Length: 212
Image 1 (cartoon, rainbow, N blue to C red):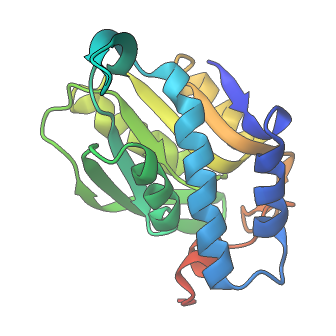
Image 2 (tube, rainbow, N blue to C red):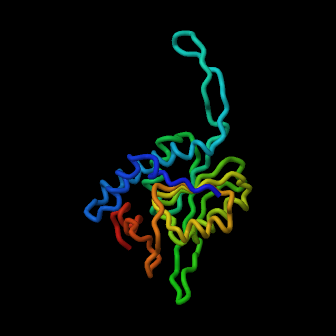
Image 3 (spheres, one colour):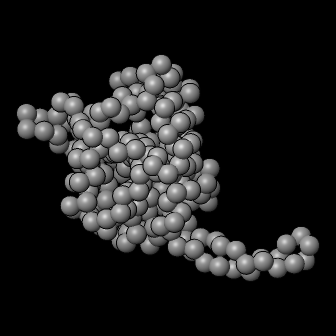
């Protein structure tokens, strides 16, 4: 598996992280910068999509050869924290269909269990899939999402997150070594509530502006 830490080569990504990590950032600004994070990630993952070269005629009646996508990716948002991040992807891939995958985690005495309670996905998937979730923490929800789209026929799957934990990345790598992960940052640990540290807090609460 290839893990791409975008913040290591894109300074703007580090500034986006500066804003998102800041506890003083309110939810309107948080949403805006989460959307910008989606823009950055969408452009970065373009290297893992298939492109075809075609001739195009310019307004000067001249011809040039440029690229277009062979197939628009299916953008799958992991609800509900992914909504602003998904909007950033749609700024770049405006013709892409959207899928939804919702799961909740249950903390048990031995760890975390994941319950999937809603999916809206094509019955058959014959295009690349980008799974969009701002926080790749334990990786358990993402594993469920990868399993789901793979069962529906997806053969090219890409994961996009704003912050990933080492534990989550290692779990995905063990189960799906050929699935690339794009993340603005890779953080070292999870706390006892399975939140990424240093992280940015609860991305859902901070994006939606409504605490459960």
